[in-house]
Length: 427
Image (tube, rainbow, N blue to C red):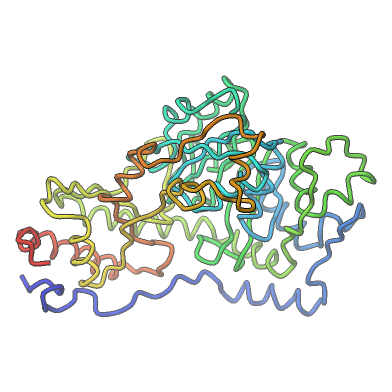
């Protein structure tokens, strides 16, 4: 076998993979029609027939509700906005505790802080990378009011167990399904099993409008509150006759007509995009099967995976080399991998407990009921993955072909067949 590229041999992959771009002529035509109409947005921040937006917003929301099988779909201008709106809509108050995963994008937790509530981090399942229900229950206190679940990498969390916990302890559940639109959990779309959930339309997701998000719920009251928070609630509640003024601090979280016109076309393609990515991921799994010390994605039998990321775990004791060595060798062969994801609880904000202002609010204030611990060690599984055993390939960043997958498999095989060279500490 040829010498590893790390030591001067030829790279297995001599090209850059094509960047994923799901936008086609259909989206171009839809955007042009909106531009020609002159109606780029039709929202009014007042109680008026246009409070709910223009024709494309309403059409996209109707189609999303039908597609995902829910009563309500509400568009927002980013998924971060969607998370902020969701936390406010379920009635979280200052000082309330919300259990959240450390293994997610930072906005999942900062949406909690937005409402002056307290994020409490629980550990993850070592196979799915999602919140572990046992860790959730271990972190429930009298001050816990909600659970923020992230369906990470493309696979749903254990929602049946989580919803049973929510019922037992009278909690609300928010499903951050940004990375998993189109995934199924026990016959339902991921994101639709919680009190409120939703999806990202950011540019590197399965479908996108550049930026944007879709909130989904079957709860009429939550849906109304989402719409109010999205569009200057404080101005509207009086004329609309809203009695519950909790968290009715409005924002401009509104998605425009162009984005929604594009979203209508993107939604039509979602199932096809998902099936294509699943086929490529299955091919990759088949090719990597049998490489000792490498765990490919584990998909639970009651759900599907849509592979926003293709996550792997290394058994570094069995391999006899570090994750850094494996990563460097694969990178040299042309496989672009991430060797870390997130441990949000270890970010400076949480380590120093400084968010609003410089005095430690909300943790240092009277609204915080207890000392919340963010030290390293509270989420050992997430921390070990991040520190030493996780590797991830960004499936959604690339427009892969079968031949591209074959090259990735070839690069892995080349490194694994020469693992003893890496064990000799030459790097």
